[in-house]
Image (cartoon, rainbow, N blue to C red; front, side):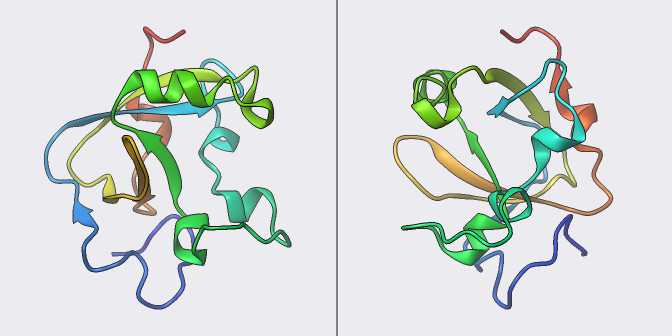
Length: 125
């Protein structure tokens, strides 16, 4: 399968799981409802930047949390202040996902043909 973004060799890692059943995750977005720009990877947003402690593979994925409270905490960080917590329902065929941080941080690599805007659920804050 092709991914939404060009990925380096070996990405996503072998231990990233295929999303083959509905799965709720939370993502921070600048706008409500979210736009395509809210589903850009760190690498796409900042092509020339080095990301400390983050592999190039992770930099090309999307950060999500399984626990809403973790996204709410992240939204209080200075770099993310003012962002909205969005509830997303990822359906089968959404791509691959891997836990990449504590407590519930995951990196999601969406497939190129997956409609990321369609997974937004409107009851967000």
